[in-house]
Length: 112
Image (cartoon, rainbow, N blue to C red; front, side, top):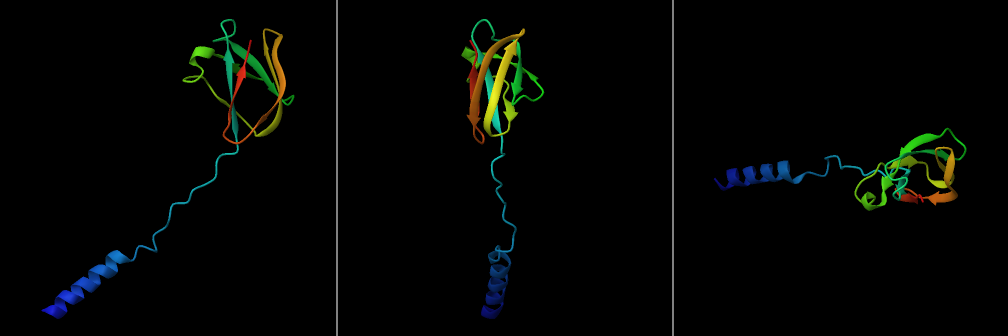
C-alpha cells in the first residue's frame, strides 16, 4: 500500500514538476518610430495641413485643437533622428524647423 502511494506521488510530481521545457514568451524591442501630433489654436484647429519631412513627398495631416491635444488627435509615424519639418496651410508656411525625435516619442508641433 505504501509502495503504491509512493509510486503515484512520484509519477504526479514528475508530470507536474517539469515545466522547464515549455517555451518562454519573448519580448521584442520597441518599434523604431517616433510620432508627430499637430496642435493648433483657434485659427488652424480642426484644419488639414501639408507636411513635408526632409524634402520628401508631402502628406496631409489633421490639426487638433489645443484643448483636446492630450486626449485626442491623430499621431503620424516617422523615422527617428534629426528631421527637417515644414508645415504649410493654404500655401502659407506655418512651421519650419529641424527637430530631433527618438524612439516612441510623441512630438507635439504647436502651430500658431
